[in-house]
Length: 621
Image 1 (cartoon, one colour):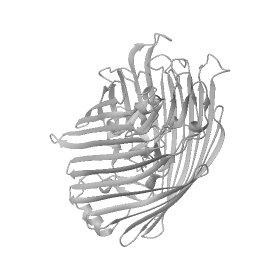
Image 2: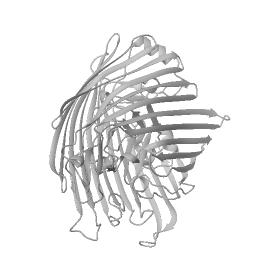
Image 3: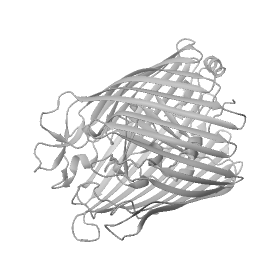
Image 4: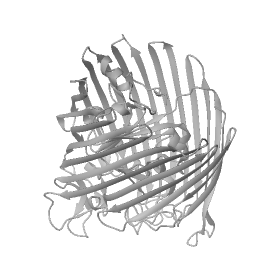
């Protein structure tokens, strides 16, 4: 199979001899992973990386980023509302604040709270792939990448045209506590692209709405995204993007059950960025970026029943500028870069605060021998509240034979307390603590990759130590939960991931993904008798499995997820999608939670029962 390199914002280059040596054995689609300074084909990655590519995105029965990520092994997607209205995300047993999210390499950090991290203006039809990097990644991605990073890469137009995708669905149950109407969900996604030789433009939009799946879980979600690429000449390119989303939903039981039965929330997010790529020579590449994020969160504890009390409004602004560069030497490649960001909040119950952050990184990779690849570096950070900190890391791989590679890494990282952790005043529920300090992580990992023909298998074991772990705790139930540095959290984990492509007949293809993760998390020095909000919610066992079969233009996919947490009941969730393409039209039928499992992921919030939907999509490019 021919190797495919995807368009990316940075140039990848490496030792010429080693590159030729490795290229001769790659027989599958080799996706290039985006890293600051470097871009690395996944076959040559020394890290534990998982990809949800556009082919899998088209098969999965999901219409939001949140729904797609719930099928990724190692990712813990804890939903409060239906179909992506709000969800917390973590990787390999970390908290929802310890994973950093990127959009085309632009860092998305919500300094109010990571509850809004995934409130992104990205319709699924605009996504090329999702890259999931597991383990501390400060050396590569900077602050807040304590347990991993998720980078969402959008499509770059290659052909002009348009698309429209519409669906509707229901669980056929009635809202007996409210309107008495049958629960439903419906939506439409649309897009148009213009692709010329020297410039490309795309615009995508979506509108999804539902009256929920139980009392006060309705939502309305609007997304809009524009992207532009301009090739000035063969060595210089400019990329711009602008996105807006407004997400309004009923928040029954989200934060303060059972008293918040009537609560509502509306979150608006605006993103804008401009970046460019410059090939200064055949050895030197430079990539500067500017980005801006505005987020407005309007939470109403009493909903519309009392407009004079229980209202929390938070407005956050984040400005960031960064520059990344890579320089090819005779022995390897050097990456250098720096970033500056300013975060500010103006909130009714957090107050008005601002802080600045400066980060500088350097990394170098080389083949020490024909088979041994090493990548080492450090990230040095200055924060106006926490001063100077350094986070070194190293990863390496050794190719025993062409198809079998041993990989290992040692990494460190940090997570800065959010403004909510520090200053929240929401008595009698939760309060912040201005004395909490940043979380710090050390992780070592060893594993192997087996890549041969249509079969891949990855296995990894890791040990992670997080000091100054932040959680909301209390000693007695009459007191509010307060943010505190609990102590040291030690996690040991092992994960397996496999993929197999099989040609059953000339016209029938089958693909099987199977993955398993086991986590053992313990606190080394936590005070006895203390109650906490998040530490017991971590996963212990996780299984993800997808099987899809395609016959000509008819495809069928079954997806299975199993989760067992440290505390609580385990559960299986099974979904499927069947679709038929007829020229430029695709008709699809989704059934989610087909065995009608009853389960929760956060607190005591029951998630949707069996749900079915029917949709049709037209694509002319």
